Structure formats: structure tokens, C-alpha cells
Image 1 (cartoon, helix red, strand yellow):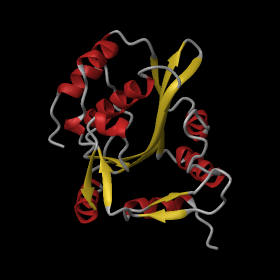
Image 2 (spheres, rainbow, N blue to C red):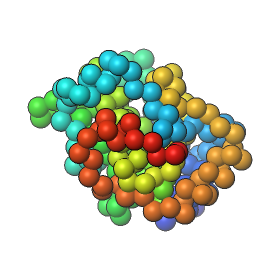
Image 3 (cartoon, rainbow, N blue to C red):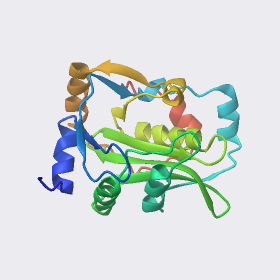
Length: 213
């Protein structure tokens, strides 16, 4: 079996494939390149009136890249209705290495000193590959996603890859596109250098500003 390194993983994502495990305790990784790819158009995020109110009077403190490993572990943890996860120990190790290389990123939502929601993924060029999100209280993952999209728009990103779509992601605007179209958009977006560290002083203003993508 060929050992997967962070460098191999980066090349795989740039080629349009990503790894998954069948279960947390399964050490084997499988390369995935679905016929239909989930993406969330940056100008297509659905922010309901009630969610706008939450963002305007946000009950969370939102941080970036402060507890990446903990976000990863929370995303991998079993929750009611989902006993298994595709995030195994190998994925945890690889993404921790990517974070150390400055490529892995997380968005974290806090209530006091409690981490109550967040997401993590990989930023390359003008693409953000969203891996997983979690929520322990109402709206936490939605707020994290809104902060992510605002940051991507402000930072000049072109593509938010969600890999697959779920009911939750579809309600936020995610759609499926055919593999050839995804690969074309991926290739174009990788030519752009997005800035994930950009300052986002007003999330709603950033979300309301068209990016063209």
C-alpha cells in the first residue's frame, strides 16, 4: 500500500479527487471522484431572514484557525442519528499536517469558552475544499458557513467545493454539477490565489457584495 503524504493529498485535490474512509476505525482510504460534485456558489448562499437576524446579533464568538485539531475531532465524533464517520485517524493526521503547512483552515463558533460549532477544509489557489462541519447548538454550523463564504468572497476565492450535497447544504444553496464541469471550474479556480487571512469586518456586507462566482 502506498503511503499517502500531504504532498500526495494536495496533488489529489488539485486533480479533483479526495479521500474518504468507510468508517472511523477503517484504516483504508478510498479515492472519490463523484459523477455529480457538490459546490456552493459564493454568490448563491441562501441567508434567510431569521439567519440574517442571527448574524446581526450573533450569539457566538467566531474565530479562525485557533483550534483546528479540536474542530476536526468534533467533526469526526458520533452524534445522534449518525454513529459512523468517514473521518479516520489517517485523515485526521493528514489534515493536521496540512494545517501545519498553512493549507488547512477552520472556522470556530464559541459560546463562552465552549466550542459549539465549526467547520474545516483545505484552501488551495482560489478553491476552498470544505470537508466537514459540526453543530452542538442551533445555528452554529450555519453561522460558521456564512463566515466562511464571507471570507472566501473577500479573499478573492472562486470555488467552494462541498464534495457532496446534504439537505442542510442544499438549504444553504449548494448544488450538484457534473464531473466535467467541476473539473473545468476547479482548473480555472486553481489559477487564482485566494487570501484566507483577509480581514472581514462585516460579514453581512461581504455576503451581500457580488463576487461573480
